[in-house]
Length: 311
Image (cartoon, helix red, strand yellow):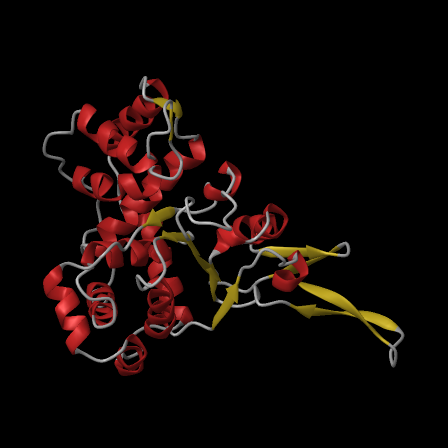
């Protein structure tokens, strides 16, 4: 970690805080997800600032940004692109879809059919698109920020477990507290606040920060704590489906990214606890339709934390 790393991270968070008011925890989780090289799922009611957060992340990080509105009649080609016949050359040419970008906002993902949702699977995991027997590789960095409406709303298709598992974190912004809402009512619209923020990073600087995340140290004692949490999700009577090995790796990556956000080169138990609900909440399934986030908090309360960890 260089001396400029904490300054870059804090400056980025300060710019984001100008747009999304009163949500420091959620902003840090979103930024940690970006640093960890994962994808973010935002689940909330319409009008909570999900789209604004995506715009703000793209501006602060200096990333190319595209937005796709998912609808029930959307086709995979609308997202990935398609090969179109060119009469002049008497051949087919691939026309890239909106997924060929650096930050993709997949807005209201669960309003699309399962067929359209599945089109994101390969590109999120492999960062490549296969069309008509050809593979087209996306240039890094590539970050998907998907939003979904609560499943009880009409016109939604639940995301399958395989799709949910592609998202490193799931975050909910929630309603603002009264003091922040008063400030929103008095202040300028979100679009004007977006125009006022400054770019702090660019693609190369972001990749430099992402490369630091695997270097954040995690002791064997702390890995023991992580494994106890994972084991509890698989053994707890309330859980029908526990965390997979991929979910366990996601927890470690996220904890490292969170520690980097705090300006440390080593992970503490508090880092694991800070990201656990966001990592596990959309991966856990309860025996009696219990919400995954509630299950994750229950798991945290049942597993003993470590004593002081010395890096």
